[in-house]
Image 1 (cartoon, rainbow, N blue to C red):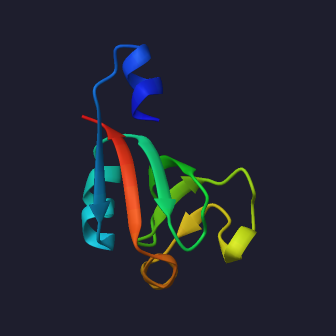
Image 2: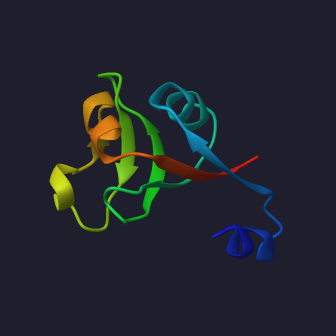
Length: 86
């Protein structure tokens, strides 16, 4: 993913994150999120109104994740990495 972003001259960073770190990043920028327990990348859309992460899940419902990822889901599917635009 970093190579794909760089191909389009977008500066991307990779980081292993806690829920609070992911929340801060997703409140500021976009990229992809990968809970290792899902073995599945999702787009980072931003935040919803219920203190959850708003994601673009191409496999809606997979591992119980639809359009949001709450703290408990996040923690149960971790560790979690994000690749985000700096």
